[in-house]
Amino acid sequence: MAEGFLERLKSEVLVCDGAMGTMLQARGLTGGACPELWNKNHPERVQEVHRAYFAAGCNMVETNTFGGNRLKLKGYGLEKDVADLNYLGARLAREVCPPGCFVCGSVGPTGHFLEPLGDVSREEIYDVFKEQILALAEGGADVICIETMMDTEEAAIAVRVAKENTDLPVIATMTFELDRNGYRTMMGIDPVTAARRLTEAGADVIGCNCVNGPEIALGVLQEMKPVTDRYLMAQPNAGLPQLIKGETVFELGPEVYAQKYPVLLEVRPHIVGGCCGTTPEHLAFVVKLVKGINS
Amino acid sequence: MGSFEEIARALIVGNHVRVRELTEIALKEGTDPQEIIYKGLIPGINVVGEKFRNNEYYVPQVLLAARAMYAGMDLVRPLIAKLGARYLGRVVIGTAQGDLHDIGKNLVAMMLEGTGFEVINLGSDVSPERFTEEARDKKAQIVGISALMTTTMPGMARTVEALKAAGIRDQVKVMIGGAPVTQLYADEIGADGYARDATAAVAKAKELLSLV
Image 1 (cartoon, rainbow over the protein chains, first blue to last red):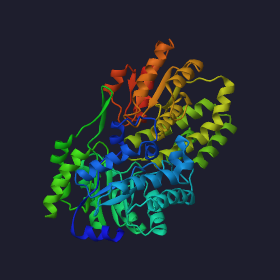
Image 2 (image 1 turned 90 degrees about the vertical axis):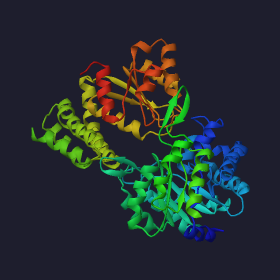
Image 3 (image 1 turned 180 degrees about the vertical axis):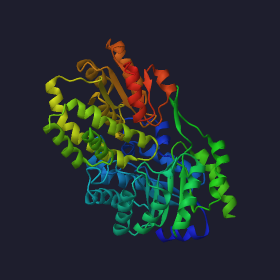
Image 4 (image 1 turned 180 degrees about the horizontal axis):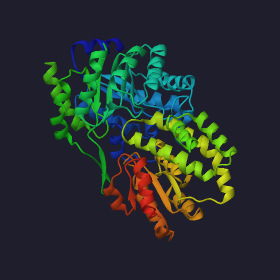
């Protein structure tokens, strides 16, 4: 299964899913609640989101485990449930995954800084990711997807964990903003540095996610492409969120998102998808655009 | 005086060892502790704020500068407390209920503190009731709330309501910020001010207390 995944990327563009968090919020997840706890308490709603993305034509979905590391779950008093919540997250996606499609185990940042800047050692971060990634693999993930990273070192450790402890292909994407220096993560990392470091760490697929729209994603991939021999992936947001009359509204609706998306395909990414604010309707448009390339 | 400039310079490059040394020397020489803050630490942290705003600095450089600032501040603060504090104002700060993202909020707290405000940092996931209690008990002039998610932003509106219900809304100014927060939202919920980043937050806090 896992080998099939990388094999497929040689000859076709795959479509990953869109947002999970904002989809769960639309189904009643409140601001203060732990999204990963829904794998246990509302599995049917999590699966409903996965099904909707597969029905829209996505080839792969990401598990509802983005914040499922010990350091993040501790904020909810759930640090003892890391293995359970990640295992369940992978199982839920596995159960509804059609033949020929893939389950990506989502691994987000810990929210802590590495020493000496922060209070967490490299060894501790390694253990934190290992606990999560092993549970995702056990639950049936086909691919490990390390995403929304801002620090290349944290991302590189997560990649190493996945490579040293599983046989699964590894995706690693980071989040960039466009400022007066160009594309930079919050930690000041540029796409070239990120691409080199993630390549060196052994990621099979690298790229960006949670960036503000397809144009930014294009810019990041254009800078990464010349310095890496890995597959490229991009998952842009539906623009920025706004709270309008108590409702979260993203700037780019499905049609506008679809209009802006083709420019990203010019750089020939190997996997595309969406992030915050995107829905199965957004992704149905992306699937259609990608069909045009694959045929 | 050279030593103030040196303190500022060491702070700007994030050298906390040097800031501590220079502060110790200055104190030993009998320098007024308030002057160390206002002529050394504050000018230094102001430069850091500007560099952050201009994308010359990113989070790592700011965190290092913060550590350096506190290295000096921790030595000076007890001495000032003994002399009777002269703060610009007292700020109670935290992230909105349910929001665990506190990096931005901590930058704001640090900048405010560096600028001469007394900051009571309540941490993350702060309930409207807690904001209200702390603001009342500590007699704060400003309540600062940060949110990174649109789903936790309503906690800001509930805090404004809780301050009203407690009868202390007119005694405090409410400032809000965070990536999805806008001036429009501040107006909508009746907050007194919005700031897009830590540097703007300092300017806004001064403005709200008529210090500029």
